[in-house]
Image 1 (tube, rainbow, N blue to C red):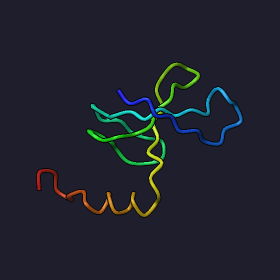
Image 2: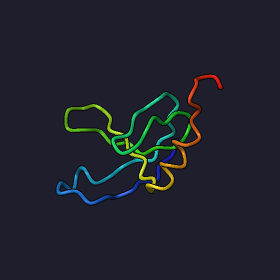
Image 3: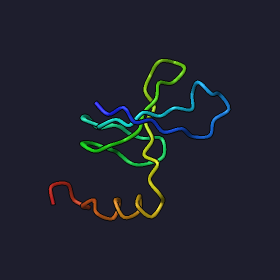
Image 4: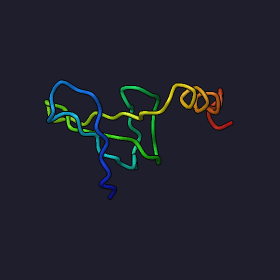
Length: 74
């Protein structure tokens, strides 16, 4: 399991830490499209569920979206 942590700007210090995590099942980051079988960052929300983020720059997001086939299975 990966243990590297990333801090982001947040008003609550206890909620600043995002842990690097390998998405072994499909997840939907709050700032990106679906991630599966790749690295994403996660933290536990105050409600106890997981929140995911990719922290990818906009140009990388657009490049990844352009590689998705229009017809599934193509």
